[in-house]
Length: 297
Image (spheres, rainbow, N blue to C red):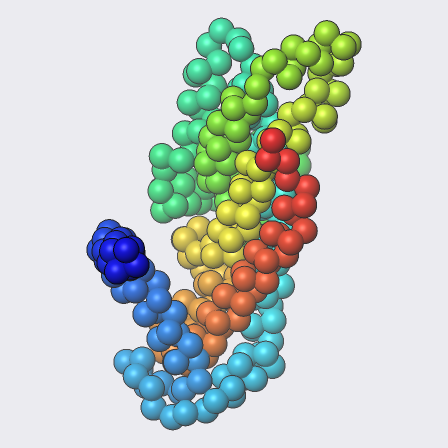
């Protein structure tokens, strides 16, 4: 009897491994191998082809920690996260609440609000590049029409990061909106009917029913948005290339420049390790602190 049981367990294990094998291979090639390779290169000086040349231990980490450019990139990254994540989630939540109303023609607005999901980072960035143009850009034309001075959106260090943040919020709104709308539509309508019978108003329902019942979806959106914000690259590369004066040189773009422009793959790998640690810490804190406020029922 015990032999039959152990044989069945062994057979089930082999079957499970067989089904998981494609995923294991893909993760191994595209996730785990690059991760191990990055850790390996972070303790070496490399040649221009990225091959390890001299073992330096933690000197790469010490070097970038003392680098003024790296400190600027960390500050720019933190500011970018603070600019984009709360703004994007609040905007998407506002639009989702509006689009959840049962009104005639609301499907058209749902399509408009979620349409940014269908655009690539490159196409979106090119559109905003023209909108921010200092002479023919739409925003400066509006400012001139109402009698205000032009703004050098992508050329002024004070405005460049804000401009990138506006672009990113617009690009991410569609995804956040769609997820939040799905969460709103999964809330039991009887909860609202019962509260109306008890005399609850709209704002009370929003505060006591909608937000608590939507908290699992909000928790997911906040976590994903934080991770995506730390990994932003495409719009920075197209709009500002990290400038002016490194005001938009977020850490991912700093890694790109260090590796593929300066050919310093060792220090670039060290920056990538630090970025991984930052994202890991933020995600753990999010789960430790944010999950306590999530209502799953």
